[in-house]
Image 1 (cartoon, rainbow, N blue to C red):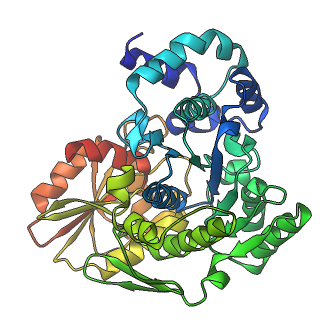
Image 2: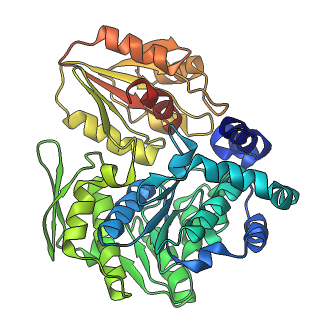
Image 3: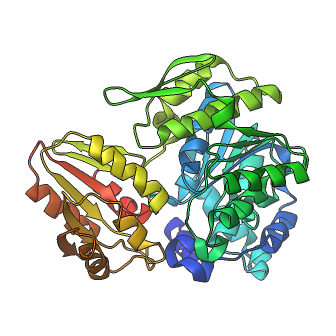
Length: 428
């Protein structure tokens, strides 16, 4: 098979949650454990760090990977979803997995893994674990796919677990209350393994984490308490962080909630130091300042064009969109244009209720099965006072926004990682 034929095989023979949603969701670790036996447990050949949570886990994973790489470690990074290229999911020191390895993995091993009937995520995860082992990484940062307790990544035994925060998302799979979702996310807390909690949330949520950690004798660290002298300021186009031992940390990531991610990461660094990792202060500063260059991170309050200014962000649920809406209010512009679409399994009303009314909307749908029809989205939006036109493709919506905007306007593209995925190739 060619590389494109291999990708087509992966996307269509293996159920892919990113593409089709619930039909691809396979809760439980049986498939992952079966695959892991086939490949002789490759993740046991290197250290791992496990990152879960509702939002911010991608930024947190990339920041940690950048800091560890700058510390001299050979770092594997497994994240999802990808935005442009499948290979974004699997990187070593910022370099994407070679096409040749992807083709060889499928061609060489499909007779072994096909009887397991793995999902797309389960199989690509095992591909990553095997690649990291063969390339002899020192440590791999592994991002949870969905939830935690039953997520296929939960077969690893990490040096550190991180849970960024808890919000209402994937409620059909994880539960319809924050404590229920927290219980699923807390499933990555392992016996005697330290866990960092980025945001404590409500008392009920905090107690879920405390109870789980105590039940397995896991040291638990709450970043909000550990970094109690943490301060974040928005400078001209960048964040500036200060904490005990870390003065004037300049951050390349400019988006909303990156202050919370930074506090989580700095806490994680301190815990890793206590467990024997060697992380110089310079590596922390360099990692924060150059994370996209070091790791290839995309889609986090990313500026795509300067005049008119065009920004995209992959926030896709009410917990994340709230920060985007707050950020938009603080931006300077003459008029605001919003190219917007959502997946059909999200709480659309909770999201629309947060969006600014003083904007021109360009409702659209991404090129995946999970995309909500743009006319349906526009109909919901109208009940919240959000007005605009409908476009059948993201490119059409962006072109319309650009035609209507002058140089002092702001165009925001978001609502779904799929919308951003369709938009990025138009600019990069």
